[in-house]
Amino acid sequence: MNEKQASLKVINIAERLCENAAKIRYGSVSATLKIHNGRVVDITHSITENTREQEK
Image (cartoon, rainbow, N blue to C red; front, side):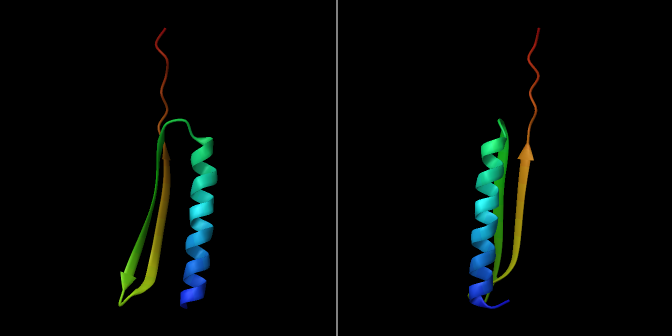
């Protein structure tokens, strides 16, 4: 993956995380980049939604 492809992938993931984060009420979003020798070699992203039930 060259630098331009990695940059576009990071931007796409960031946009997807922002879109999905707007849909959840409680939870977390994260992105992790693995860098080797100054280059992004792996990208991991996750979205976790927590559900909360109201007590009656």
